[in-house]
Amino acid sequence: MSGLPLYILLCSGEHERVQMAAMMASVGAVSERAVEVFVSMNALSVFAKEAPAEGRYRGGPFSRLLNEKRVPDALGLLRQAKELGDLKLWACSMALDVQGLEMDGLVDGLFDGPLGLTKFLSDAESGQMVVL
Amino acid sequence: MSERIKVDARGAFCPGPLMELIAALKLVEVGDEVEVWSSDKGSATDIPEWVKKVRHELVGIEPRDAYWSIVVRKAK
Image 1 (tube, rainbow over the protein chains, first blue to last red):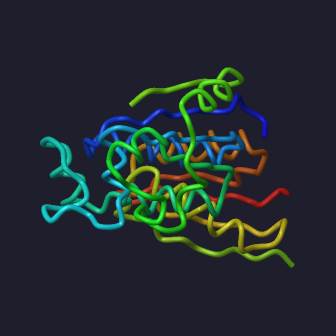
Image 2 (cartoon, one colour):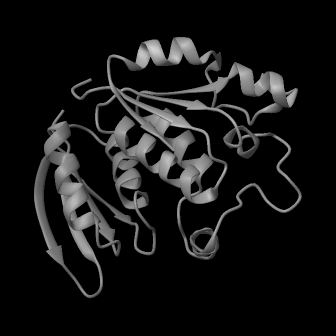
């Protein structure tokens, strides 16, 4: 890996922010940077196996455009980035507990496991952090 | 004998064309070339920047009718 590791703390479940997190994570991971994404708060629901009835992604006016155009799907981008680069996704253990979710309630093939914020912050000291 | 494969990513938005290029590069041998067609305006700067960063080789980039043709040689 040639660049500073990138740590993305994704809290928002807003489509636009989830999309930007997926874009940053995927481009970073295929550009020889180690990337870790910590998914917490409202963002966790976006990754739930059972998507809400009104759709997985909810957001503002730009979200509608993302849905209308041929924009890469956020979860699809993350899957592709895991295949092509060094990307790890962690589910916030607090958010799992609060929502009463287990790891098998999250979409398959994306997460590397549950993780606590303390460990994530400690690891992130070695890199660059972005909060979305 | 090196080969060139073509990836038509026209209509895909950022970072779709880059990801399609990278997926194609995984499949070819060192020395082979991938020609990606992209209508995403950012690709004209983003793909050359990525090629430089990961040390492949930019063979050529040229504007066509409403899209860019970018040729990359797999260097490693």
